[in-house]
Each structure stands twice: as structure tokens, then as C-alpha cells.
Image (cartoon, rainbow, N blue to C red):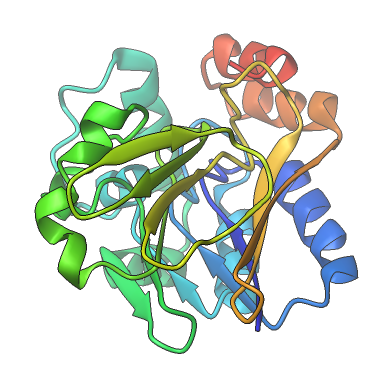
Length: 245
């Protein structure tokens, strides 16, 4: 089975559309979204509508939780809080209710894959995993982890290979999962990449061949940036699209 997985769309319709167009050529059997449909961008409803239609499973992200009233975001910096407040006012009642009902995680039993937004440790706190130190916190969970755990949240592409007592960071390149190890992979961001590559990021996983592939696609950044400004959001959110940080 071939899975198309994407995360951290952040209300970027142009990036999401480009990703889904690219996935049409990948013979995908199921689409899955790892959360943060809203926040930062100018098209929260359009993105929510699309994800609701195409994704078999969608995981709750921290920005989704904030807009849906499922977490306190008063400690976010001012521009991020403002974007969430704006999105809360823009979302339809149907999309708000959908966000309210999203799960924190989901296991794809047929593919031996766990889906979550941040670290599976203290899952409702949305901790990051962007270094081996954070991945090491998952070692007590090793016996119950799936062969592959897919996360978003950091907006970075990262690969960590775990044994029962070790963690190794691997290059974020295509690879085949080895028997006897378990993997945590951060899939990057569709709508707000932060690895100095402004192309939208997504991944494909072939659960039969155990093959994992990182993908990038260009999209109309200026159109997405214009929608950020039209929504009267922080100008820096538009500028960051151009440089991928």
C-alpha cells in the first residue's frame, strides 16, 4: 500500500494544491494529514475543506487545537496568537467542529504506522522532536511503537532510527526500513517549510516495500503571500514563505 502523508499546511492553499497535484502521479492508495491545517496563512477554510475530502485520517495539530478551543495559546507570540484569532473568526462552523473532533494520534494497523503531530510522549503537550535527545525520550515506548512513527510540528525533515536502547539520526533522504529497528520520521511542512528550502514538503511510504521517500514541489509562493497580507496577518508570515524559514 502506498501512503501519501503531509503535515503543517498552515492555511497555504497554493502549497497544498501543488502537493496533491504531485501525489496524483504517485499511485497513492491513502492520504493522511498530520495536522496544523490552520495558522499563519490566508486560506484556512479552503485548506480544511480539501483535507476533509482527501485524507483518510487527519491528526490534531497544536494550531488546530488552539483554534478549536482545545488548548491555551496565550503563551504564543503575539503575531501567532493574532493569526489564530483571525482564523477562528474565518472558519465555518463545520470546519471548527471538525477540528474539535480530531484525534491526537492514530495507528494504521495495516501498514504498521503510527501517526501523530509532535512527539508521541506526552502527546497532548505537542513536544518537538528535531534532535536525537528528543527522540531518545521515546525509548521506553519502543516495544509498543509501530515500525514507523510519522510526525510533523517542527517543519523539518528528520529521520531517527531506534533500537531498544539507542537512537541514531539518519540523513533525511529516501530509505528502506530495516527489520529490528523502529523509525521516527518528521515529514516537513507543506505550507511553512523551515529548512531553507521554500518548496512544499511531503512524503510517500510504500508499506509493502518498506520504502520511504521524501518529496518537494514548487508552488505559487507570491499568490500565497498575497493572501497572508489580504487577511491582515503578520507580514513576516509572507516573507518566510519566500526563504523557507
